[in-house]
Length: 483
Figure 1 (tube, rainbow, N blue to C red):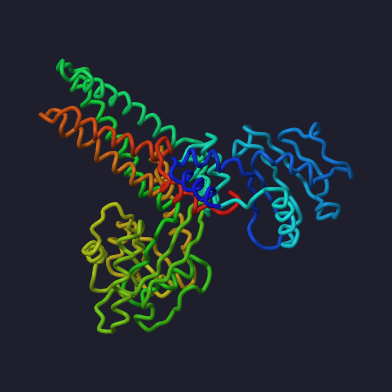
Figure 2: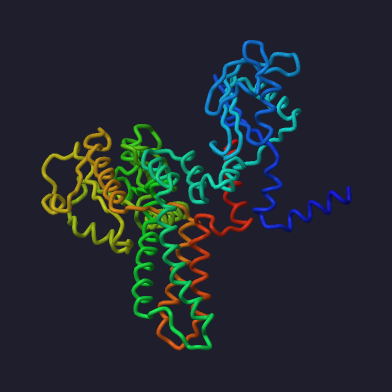
């Protein structure tokens, strides 16, 4: 027992790649379909024992599954047995490594969706020496077997979690390596630059300058521009991934909650003629033409001596800061005495972000008996005139939101949507900026080289060229079991 403990401690002290080589000898299994009863369940197995275990438990036409009959990327119909006891009729898909998802021999068993059948199949496989997989272990093996890099592996989780066409397309583009190619090209150019600096260090006594400082200036400027473009794209990528936040704001009793209900097509918020009914933030998400929008109904903006309502108004201001789009709702029957410009001025007094998309909504057209004052000014501000109560012209709001979302997504070629990638790019940019700032000073080349190595490290951490056990543990622990 003591010897085994010492061996375990020795393995844990090794770099993760070496640890994984030992760990990789296990054959793993997991149910890859969601928990619960369904028509079909999928059990996947990966590792060196996959084919031999399959031959022990699976028969076709009541005959043993001979190794010579097995072909990669083929499906076979037959029965699974626990010794001589029939468990289920199944469809088996076979993949030989390295031409599989994990890069190892893999078997996927499609069985009936009974919880009991799934449990018994797992027990049969475990009796043959197969162990249950950890969360994300199949994809981790794909990473270590160079079937995908780390950014692509993270995109797999994003693809599974995608809830709209926009988030699906973004994850798919990253899983296919579009983002990784961009990072690899950036890093390669940086490697060439770092190599020249390292060469100067080798010949420091001869006072030789291999890297032309003007050329370095130019290259650093180009690299920083590309990296900052990626950093700036994170805001777009993040809202595509999580849903575009749309805050519905305005004074009390102008129809904000009625508008939310009309857009969602359900009674999500309480509607009342009493001002200040909405005292907390109400959120709900809807997908419109492939884009996910997260609508936020807020408390009416006014001075209030009610403690609870005041807290709701505070939260309104917080949500306004977080929102990408603001729907400012005004009651057309109460526009007397204030112009549309004044309403806009009131809005901009507490919103300082020019990037936010502002849409003015004139509500309650069904209650108008005549054209309201300052109608022309509101038209010039491209106001959308609606009746939230009758659900009139609601499509004009959703059309405007979709148009804005399409415009933002088309403008950027490569989009960053992962917070880890965003932070790595920021740190890389900081290190490169330090090199650029000190390139023409008296700072020694070896100190510049340190900043270059820092930039290379952070770019490499995105794709997994450089990684730590902590990074991998954080990433793959968030995967579902079976993926």
